[in-house]
Length: 433
Image: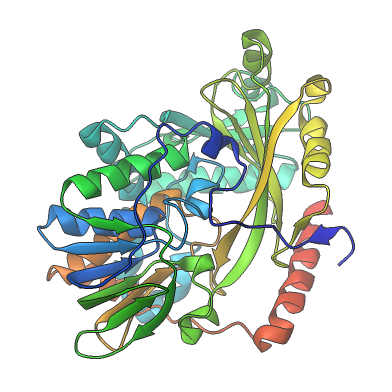
């Protein structure tokens, strides 16, 4: 496709700002033997690491397998924005989960952010955690949507105030002429996602979790005690939890057909002078607009502007990733025209057809968690807690999510991407009108 290319991946971290500024270079040996465990977790992103940590806190014996490095995928590459809520419009599934189920999903969406706060405090994780988030409006209808969102958050019992800002009020938080106003809250926030991943993995390891990197899973063999096979070893366990999401590949075809890897990209500027950083985002909040192919941005702890977007369903990245995102950044902040771009990278997010996280069981003792649809930093944490609670004998919340139906993408491998890319093009056109 003109202007796009397949991302180049290695088994080491991508060339991101996060990888360059990680607190530690965690290195765990690959699995080279046939071992046994109570539970084996596949995929060491937020979901897998926190599932392992939650289970270890409950006294369970856990092995955690990662194909590359801890946080190698979306968990270590994303925009670092902590956003409450789980999925999109749980009311759509009321006939499957009931009114109480809908209310419970909203409650868990509020709790998701609190788990991150609790993790960071309990384990002393240095991940530049800050609270403050602002949705920004490009059109009058966005402001009307924001007013509805504010009222909705109050109605579901969110303890954090959502404050509607006009254009002038917004300047105290996000100083950009392109925006008409915003919706501010301090329940959401931002952080260094890879450092959070690494800190959570360290906490899991301290509780006895055995972690193996560079251990790509090639097969999952069902049975009374399923066996997970890697290139050089295997793990036989009572239960398997699959957390590979967009990067699980075709290890389990049924799961692969229900999640679509979708590309998103980020650039990071050089560190900005204090005055310039305060001039563009005086509130030091994370920022996002409401379009289908949205822009999202924030300041890092060392005052770089991290600017992301270019989401598309092709799974490809722009050939000129840095140049394309740089032009988008300058439309928001023209004052950054002479600022150097130090990093540019892409990654895959797992999209589900109905935009709700997918939890379920295969063969009873093989469990899966996937498809956060670009909204996973906080929900991964609560999905991990729900899954660990189910394994430990409290299945109510897990079973609630498992009742939500998930379907394979239409068109199979050949046609599902072109069809969804056309759908995104339609929504982009609608956003522009």
